[in-house]
Amino acid sequence: MRLATITLVVDDYDRAIAHYVDVFGFRLLEDTRLDAGKRWVRVAPHKDGPAFLLAEAADGDQRAAIGRQTGGRVSFFIETDDFDRDHASMLARGTNFIEAPRVEPYGKVAVFADLYGNLFDLIEPRRKA
Image (cartoon, rainbow, N blue to C red; front, side, top):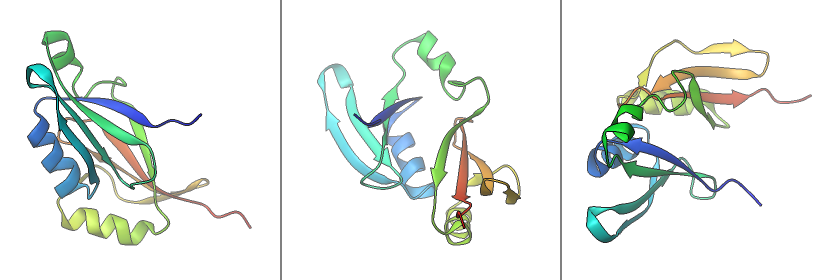
């Protein structure tokens, strides 16, 4: 077994796709239309890893959860093998980094936010000697 997909509640499919693909540089893996205006939309930083299912909010409770699915904590950890390259690329596309890069015992990291306020870490793990 493996973790394959994580749901992110969003306000609008097309707005969310544009943000994750154009601003974060994720890949659009799938956009399948379903019944009643729903869609199966998956995006991911890499085609071979876990994906995010972008789920358009269907009611008030779901709309209230947008951007607060983990209560304001960093929710997702995006690993890279070249922090400086990916950080610069994301900055150039307009990613909202909410702090400067820093070095921690576990690696080089910076927190960024999506258009809804969900928090992500971009992290290059420390290599073991």
